[in-house]
Image 1 (cartoon, rainbow, N blue to C red):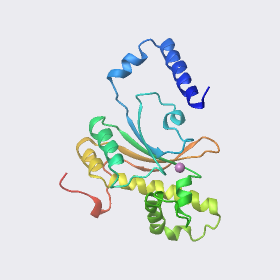
Image 2 (cartoon, protein in one colour):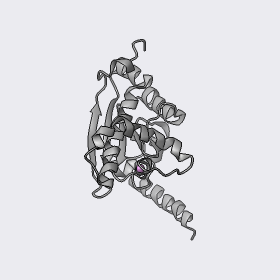
Image 3 (spheres, rainbow, N blue to C red):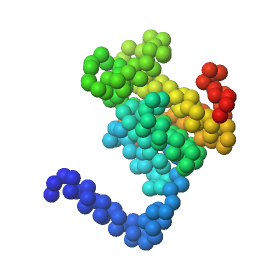
Amino acid sequence: MKPYEKLLLENKAWAQEKLEDDPEYFTRLVDIQTPDFLWIGCSDSRVPADSLTGTQPGEIFVHRNIANMVVNTDLNMLSVLQYAVEVLKVKHIIVCGHYGCGGVKAALSNKSLGIIDKWLRNIKDVYRLHKDEFNDIHDEDKRVNKLIEINIQEQIMNLAKTSIVQRAWKNDNRPDLHGWVYDLHDGIIKPIVEIPAKTKLDDIYEFDNL
Ligand code: CO
């Protein structure tokens, strides 16, 4: 059997198992999608949103990219965000990073890796903004993990800066924004920052005509 054929076989077994547990399982899911959560996570294969959180199909709307970034010119992320907030009406947005993230590690290095340099530049900018916080940290892994945490905080801020989130805050008092970090060593997710709906932002970021 070719390796990819195993995926199709596993899929058949999964579908059958679901049907055995609940004959209506797929018919129910076909017509409705009402997830309460939008998950913005890293593409890393070891950080699957639904397995880590025990969520089932239909419960969590997912966007993943390298190093769980919220980049304000990323049409892909913005489309997911708009759909999740305005159509699905999610109540919570989670940005979940993970310790040891290769994207953040690469951003802290001086190596050019090709087109991904442009993406990682956003993380280098986060580092520059918080450079003082790294003065006393000399261990390489600790520096990476510190930047991972700060980067999550900045991406949560980037969500709050969008008109999409601010409009939903104003009109519907949601979504709350949660920054989490996952530890590959023990499988545990740790919350590191939370911005509830309607939190006051730095003046310059608040739109007053939404
Ligand atoms: Co990663």
